[in-house]
Image (cartoon, rainbow, N blue to C red; front, side, top):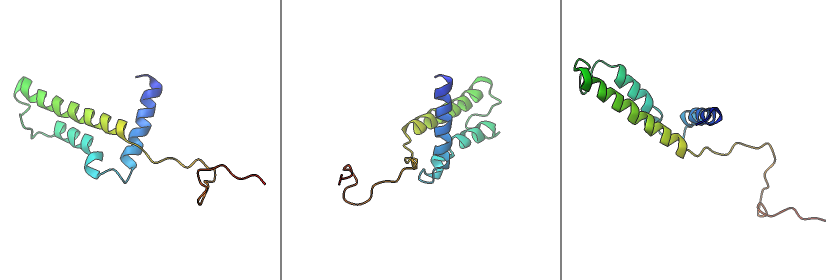
Length: 98
């Protein structure tokens, strides 16, 4: 992914997080993963050398994969273009000439 693609993904991510149509638990999935990573209470304690770190990495990578897929599937509403939209029955037809 190039810099422009990364920038577009970041912009789309912030739209995703601010969209009220997206359920709250989906918005906070990444935050929950970071809290799990920082928290001293884990499924496998971090005192166990390799396995304790492996479950943290697994949770973080699963959350990252989930968020990337969610943001890629996200379809934001169209931004208003600033042009007036046709109203009424002829909204899809060109204007009549007189």
